[in-house]
Image (cartoon, rainbow, N blue to C red; front, side):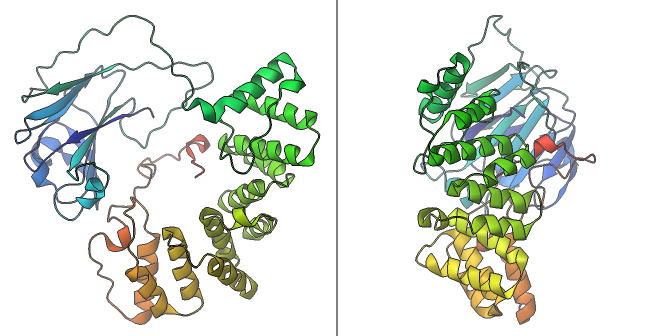
Length: 412
């Protein structure tokens, strides 16, 4: 799913130059349109954030040009390598803040994307040792171009440099460990990343699991063993080896291992009781008080739905009452609702200044339930509670008739 993504400055007069043919449109509805007769011609034609995927383009070139800015950007590639074409626009009007909150000058921009699949619901696995090559050309321009006249340049026939691991400091101890394992030099085993490091074993390092297991066997202090067990469990979980991950994580006394095991048990095993038991193992106040851990713990307690779980939720959330974190605010509102304080819960939801998020509808769903209980109107305004009004298309997986492979799952 190696889509390239480019942000392009735009204005209401930005002109869309895209191929004809059937297009999958994702806005507040999901369906197909004919681009020639139904597609927008300018940015001003789009009033709702929208994504477009070309299913059978008549040409594999596309781009945009903005007369008021005197600039544009075009793209061309070999269709056999890169058939995917995508345009994303937040349009003009109610959804403009979704983009200008991120731009330096507060102006609008578009996303132009190209990829090796027809749309982003389709995933393909790149197996160990396998290579995939795709070549594309981007053309910045000061005048509007014709996509039917663009010619595909000759790609240089030379070896391409391979990327190394990003941010070397985040992978240095794991590379050192792999080297020590390969050379069988236990004295060169680095210290396992501690609680303050925020380092996670990269799942893309194929032989790292064996190296971490070796470090566990060679380590003496119990704390060091537990830290490596956490890293091994995280590495296994990221590779969808959930059962092995849970076996390793539950054997570790590292509080991070308990938190991750609790998350996995709820999300993958649908076992809130076992999940709560793992969170209850956390004996480090700094870990338990982390907003993400508290929210995950609270979610498991919600699923238990007992009087004792309700009391524990209140205790957890009261401990972080001074934090204004969005997920904590949402968790407090759910707790109030579960305690029967429906109006207080709704007031908390509607009185908070939420960050804008894509494709998350839990706040709106909670507000809808509260309004129904209170007998209030549920015709909410655009961007209600910081959530968009896109059709629930998620990670573009529901569009496919066949089930997605297990490898397509994302942990976080």
